[in-house]
Image 1 (cartoon, rainbow, N blue to C red):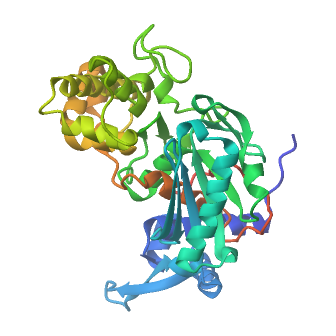
Image 2: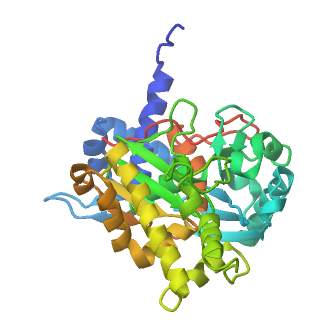
Length: 418
């Protein structure tokens, strides 16, 4: 293949992307700080900032005193430049949220679902209904929406159709992006839910400031986002991070994926509830759904020996699974998230750390911090909403035209760190 020579237009867009990404991720910043942080010349920074101000994508955000000179004007991405939507396709509900450019949540729609009815057509209907609902709630013209990010379980192919392979849901090559495009002309971006959680935490939460991290999602399913050198590690076909389907017990409990002994069969919500039922003489935990049932088991931990036993074992399995992440990836930080991960970690994080320490090699474990997700249970939807934002940043602030065939998964560019 013959390499294409970079044009002046390519260089200009690249410089715009570098500058705009730095303003968005680290702002407010002054022109002087942008010159230092991006290695662009003062003249280039001044010219590009003037363009951004004229286009309305950047605005002034006050000033700070300088050393003996005039106050330096701070710059930030204008929250009102556009809106983005994030969708979390969970196993118990589809959540649709609308955000402005500062990622302030403006509207939300929830659609509870039965797992047995998590058919692709039903999912698409909920997403499209949600787009209309949150736009109406916030009074936002759909034409002002930059894009919709959709977080799903399983592996997302990088082709135009957005094929989703979610083995535990029975989805085998579902063309989710094509199905959504039949109902809206807003650009659609699709990615794995653990990866969108990871991007949210790296941009705005517990992952900030590190270059090597693993963001672990524990909910109905179990997954992870691996960040190496500041960039998402996806593997050859974007399926890296299926942590929940690593083997924790050879020949162990049956996992939803069909294999035996997967970590998900022990620490995923369904696995915890199944183990509780087995230990409780076949009686299920009280609750109307997985979240309330897990909450009931946690609430009973001090009064029920069965609940205490199951949760103590769960903490041990989770710690052992985290130790695997420590040994494989040597991260600076592991962030535990997902609704079940937060429920367990909020109460037993010291015990989870101790269990990880028992199973990890001493040296890499001593170099790893284990902490909780900072963005709460809606972090997956927030992370999904960052997908169209990342596309805007990597394109230097140029809006995608309606009907453009944007990449299906999240951005493959590494946003600037220099």
